Image (cartoon, rainbow, N blue to C red; front, side, top):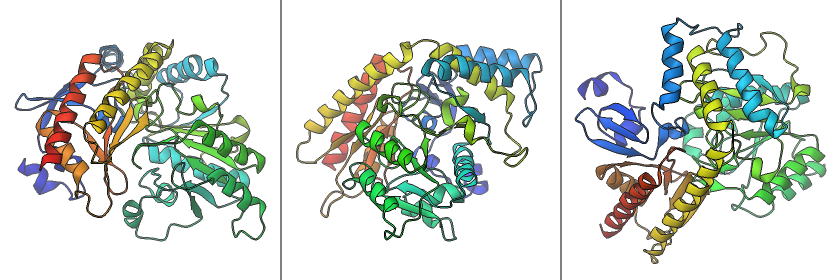
Length: 419
C-alpha cells in the first residue's frame, strides 16, 4: 500500500479505518484483493442504497456505454437526460403530487446545498440562513457555514458568516417556537432569514432523528414568516428512511430539496436541487458547473427509479428491515445495561450511541468499529465527538445479511467493552 501513503494527501480518512485494498463488490459485500469479504453496512456513506453493482443498473450502464451514449454534456439536451427527468416525474414526483423544477447544480451533495442557499438569498433578498446544532451539509464554505460540527467548520480557514444555529429536536426545547418568537420580535437581534435548512435525520451528526411534529412545527413557522424551507435529503433521501423522501412521514412539502448520493443509483456522481416553480428566477448561466450532465449517472439513476420506485415494495421492505434492525440494536443495548447505550435513527439509517461523560471509556465507538472491521463488517462512526456507531446497510440487504451484520456488531460491542 506504499503508493497510497507516498502519493495521497494526509486528508484521507476511511482508508485509515479500513487499511486493506478493496477489489470487487457485489450486493452487500466488498472483497479485498486477498479475497477476504466484508459485509458493507457503510454503503458508500449512503451513495449505494441499492448495493454494489446491482445487475439491472449494470446492464443499463453497459448497454449505454457500448453504443457510445453521450458521457458528458453540461446542460445540453440528451436522450439520457430526458429519460432521467421523465423517470423522476413519473415514479417520484407525480405519485406524491409534488411540483418541483430540477436544478442540476454539479456532481455532489454540497453542490446541491450551495445552489439552494444561493437561490434562497437571490429570491428573498435576505442573507441569513438558519441551521441546527450537530448538522452537516457539506465541506464547501456555504455548506460549512450552516453546519454545526466545530471540527469541520474550523477547517474553513475563514469566518463563516450570515448564519444562525438553533437547537435541533432533542438538543433543546422549543426550537420552532423559539424561531417564531425571534423572527416576530424586533428586539431579538435576528433579521428575518432567507431560509431554514434542516436534515430530518442527522446522519453525520450522530444519527439523530427529528420528530414528525417538530418538523411540521418548523415548516409552519417558515410558512408563516415567508422563510424558505430547505430539506437536505442528500444522505437520507432515495429511500434511506423508508419513503423516497425522508420528510414524507411528517407530511411537509419543503420549498427546496437537496438530493445526491444514491440519486445516481450506481454510485456515480449526480446531484439535484428541487425547487418550487415560482422560485425558478435564475437567469441563463447564473448558476452552472462543468459536471451537470454526467450521462452514465442519468442512465443508472433513471434505471434505479424505474426498478425500485415504480411501486412501494422497496419502501415496505425498508420499513420492515428498519424495525428488525432497531429491535436487534435494542437487544445489544439491553445486554449492556451499565453502559447507557442509546439506539438511534429511522429506517435503515441506524446508530448506537455511547456515553461521553467524564469517566466513560474513551473512543469506544471507534474501538467497536475497528473490531467490527476485524470480524468482517464495515461500519463507521459519526457525531461531532465520534461517539456513535453508524449503520447504513444497503436498502436491498437480505434478512440473513442483516442478522449476520448485527451478530458481528454485537460481538464487537462485547469485545470492546471488555477491553
